[in-house]
Length: 313
Image (cartoon, rainbow, N blue to C red):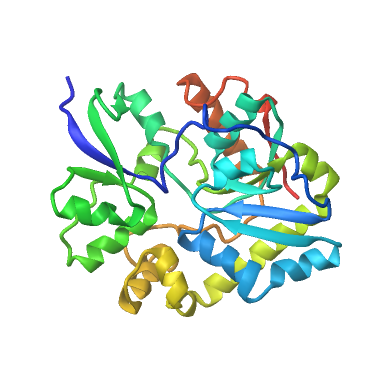
């Protein structure tokens, strides 16, 4: 029998079912058809890029202007729920969320771009006959503020914390007190799993068909934003509002995070942000394989491919 351990999961990074919390899903909002309504979470490097292209330098609106669209951008941690209930045209979520959402509401969703990676903890638990939950099971799971995870672990409030890439900054901030157990992405690779994306660009299939120029403009602008981030990683991460998005307290921590997550001069072998945001065939095949394996363990719907498709624009 597995011993019970306190296991901390970040609210912002958790991969959970959308069942029961979504009221409706529409192809587009009730507003003007010539406005692209984008909603996404305001965190990590993807949040920095979207804020940059959507506000500070305006390249997203410029590209939308070229094809006759306006932009409405909302950045919130409730992004998945709002994408479903408020009729935003484009959202950002992972493969399991998108598959669950499509199956629950009997809708067809389309994936047209990629961003960072996330390890599927529930899939690992299922494969190893482990149980996660708020009570009972092999682990006691509690939630906390995303950026508090590392400190709570170092302070002994919990035994293990598992979250996205930015937890790495805590080890630098606390002087090496936090030990890395393992990278789950490495474990998944050893088990033959493809790594699911934390943040894929998703829209209703009907929206992609009816408003493809707007979707292409968004993807082009996002690629320019990613290029900007990789060309100016230190300047970008040291801006005060972006430091808050990245969960760092000072410029030294911001510099460390860039070295760790983008320059990969620390412990990572690959960057935490995709440099090419399009969908190559190999990526699509990997995501489809991942969802098939997830469905075998009842993590994703068995008919996920009736509700979710991948498109290389």
